[in-house]
Length: 64
Image (cartoon, rainbow, N blue to C red; front, top):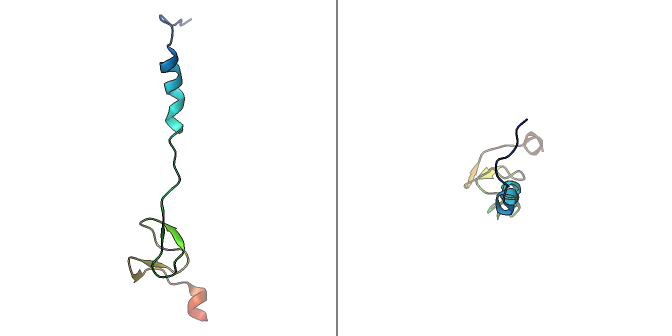
């Protein structure tokens, strides 16, 4: 049976649990076309624009 040779210090013991503590909320930026909040460097889910260019055309919007 394995037995630790030395006592684990409080600092070392608490350091194990800090790996998942620093999770932050993703940065949101405003879309210049429709002014909705979107994640940075992604295509806007509302209008389909990215960097001033139309990337995604919604079939429902095209039919109307």
